[in-house]
Length: 252
Ligand code: IPE
Ligand code: IPE
Ligand code: MG
Image (tube, rainbow, N blue to C red):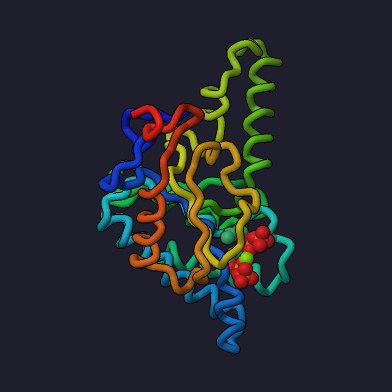
């Protein structure tokens, strides 16, 4: 479990800002289709929404923002769409890295590096390395990410430690599992937002979202920005988080 003392957990006060917002950025294709545009333009507009959202998170002093940008299942899309998405990721790092660094944003990337072309891997490493000491916003990009594969990789690594005699199976606790995931050091999301009206996780942060509040918005991702982020936070603030305990209201 993440350290509760530093997060907004266990509260339902109107003042609480989430410490970690995670977003499934969905609906680029439908946004484009509604305008008679190719899907690629939906993805391009989606990058503008990413910029607005990062800025809003900085302005609102949200310390962790995780964005689901490409899933391990998205490889099943047509090759030209995959090429568009890879191209956008490269361009985003090339164009935005200096400004992110200037704004004291730390970039972290979770997911597998397999299948990712070498040029993009180098850019990702550069972004993470350059910004590693930054402290204002931790921007976690889930890229080529799938939660089941993340959990499986973590389990495999721990099994290897046990086989090598460096770890006892009795030492495998939920804390150790948490630290073996790609999100090591990142607190669990307080709120998960998914745009586009779909109400599913699509293999995103399955372990980390055990007690996360979910907010599903009908808007497509390219229409997202500060206003919708605030709307989601307002919904989050109206929730009472119990973590398996009793309602504060009923015990008051
Ligand atoms: C989200 O938009 C972007 C990625 C999944 C990479 P979609 O491309 O899934 O858009 P829809 O869901 O088809 O509208
Ligand atoms: C989830 O969206 C992945 C990302 C937003 C990167 P998808 O559009 O791939 O999810 P499904 O296929 O509708 O579940
Ligand atoms: Mg989609």
